[in-house]
Image (cartoon, rainbow, N blue to C red):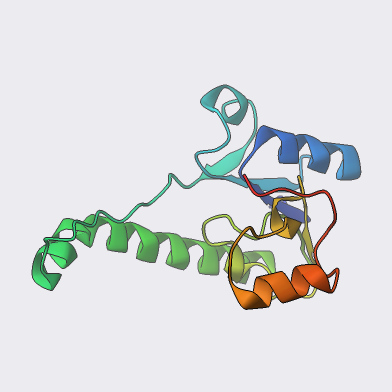
Length: 152
């Protein structure tokens, strides 16, 4: 018998994984997608899909051809990840619940579904931007930033 996935959790920190477990509990029907923010010690105890961080290498002195050649592997890894997750979503179906971060690698593909929920693990998305731009000063004057938050 094929095991059906009911929920997908894509997180980048152990703290967010903990929040997910507090909210939804533990189930064998869950699929976890981790990136490099979750340590190996935690990943080895959970059935998961792992996507290592893909970072483009760029040097200001490089021309476009050298940049493309240096980053060919990263591009193929990104394409492979996109295809793998699209196939996964084809087999899982539209009725699966998706939980996780909005900033993780490939997470944009999950949040186009109706049953997608963000797990916020802090106030970094809502902090006050420290800058001298007139628009930021105007927003601060109007009180449209969260009071007491600091950029870090």
